[in-house]
Length: 65
Image (tube, rainbow, N blue to C red; front, side):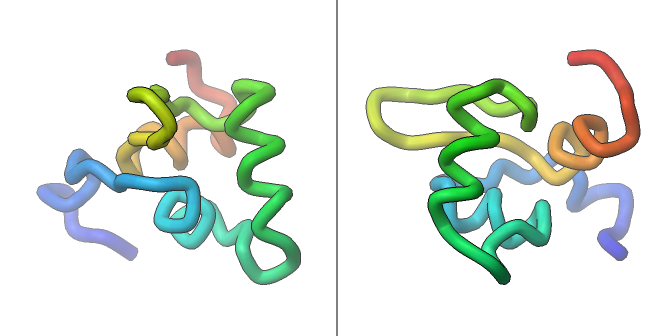
C-alpha cells in the first residue's frame, strides 16, 4: 500500500499504469484496451499515457473522475 503522499505522483506510460492497476500479469494489450476505453482514469499526451495511483484506484472503487 502506498503512503498518502505517493498517491498523486504521476505514472508515465501504459506499462507503469498497468503495473499499478495489476493488469500486466496477463497481457500488456489488456492495459491499452482499458486505457483506450476509458475504464482507467488517465490522460494521453501525444502517444504517452499519464495517470496517478489515486486516479487508478478510483477507477476500481467506483469513484467518479
